[in-house]
Image (tube, each protein chain N blue to C red):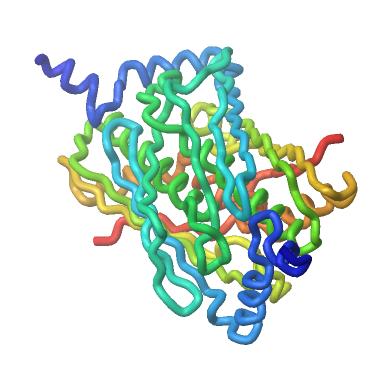
Length: 188
Length: 188
């Protein structure tokens, strides 16, 4: 294995392919327009199941390699059957996964080989909001915290900078931190 | 089966238990303080896996009835191995599941029996943001749309109002629409 090969695939990230992708999008920005889709179907009570659908982007329509479907529910203490995590727990998953993917990509680009990355994510929520008991209490999380433990062949400072750069380029962090326009409709 | 029993459990929602829970929280608001937790661990490349952890609330610590773990990844077109949906697709799942759970609860409270609820959720994202190609393009979704099809023993107008009331009390909708304080740290 040559040094070139070693640095081409680092942390499982195919860097030449990643940089080639970035260059292609730089030349044809319309390829960067993606649309992701999912369908949620009610099962019973607070239990529902979501199927991840095809997505469009890079000038085409794409199907995931596997079928992905996820249950969500409320736990017993919130009068559900606990057939899946609560929807708000999936927000924590989305946030952690987005930041971690960025950490791996950015570390590879900076020639840092990672040995482990673990993020603990927690969110505080006052359910007086969704229960309609206090108009001054918001429905959603009041605060979300992510704490990373990251190990690799770089200084603590460099590893810390990789995490912060991932935060600066994270799609999920941006949505959670800054909000997004969301429409909810019931077409005729 | 008496009429009372019929209306006690509607749409799989245990209404007496739900109202009792609301009344308990009304009397002791500190019971409404919940904290949800998850741990995300890097696997390789952009692939990571999240374990849903215990959560605290209602004055205690709670363990889900089952172990819940979820993979996330980037698809091949985004230089990943497609070992799971992208993190941003889990946002669509969280949103749909939260709104649907609310629909079932609110319909039950309004004595509406549902026969089917389906939500199609989609989000538009311009990847020039996360790829660092355009500073004016945000990292996250630019817009998210949810379209419900809902059927039950009520008028279209009533069913539509149930969906809108669910939106008005949805934790995930609130977080996505209005944003939340998120900290990302690498403790020493």
